[in-house]
Length: 145
Image 1: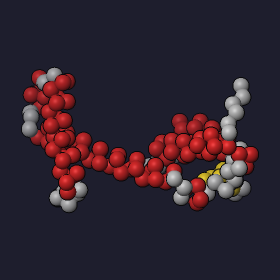
Image 2 (image 1 turned 90 degrees about the horizontal axis):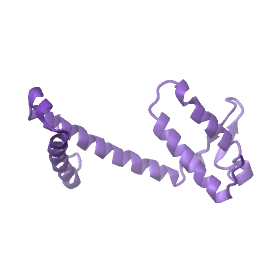
Image 3 (image 1 turned 60 degrees about the vertical axis):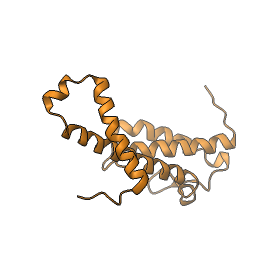
Image 4 (image 1 turned 60 degrees about the horizontal axis):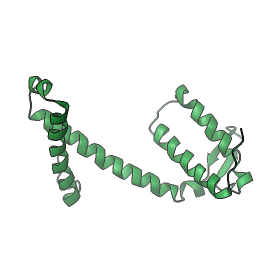
């Protein structure tokens, strides 16, 4: 099978690969063999950068024998997508974890098991709404440990 891409489609594919790889591996502290199959595909796609006029975005590093994103690529609009993702992810996780903490503070383990899934979600969402309003109004200024 052969897939044809325009230069613009290939450029968009580079962003998509980079973002997917970032989400999958940004916090890895060691190599994960299960993810190597994705790196192989990325390298295969990156190897065609010059063919699509993107050689200023992807370069081959002879020392490592691999293709890497250039600084120009990392400073392109793809960076804004990462910043937006990280910002949204931060707030979403903070709100969710605080809501769960507050929910578990107000019930006993025995009571938790008696609640339906719908009741658990509704009660957690009440706390989420409280935290969403707080952070929307004040950011993290009122958080204290």
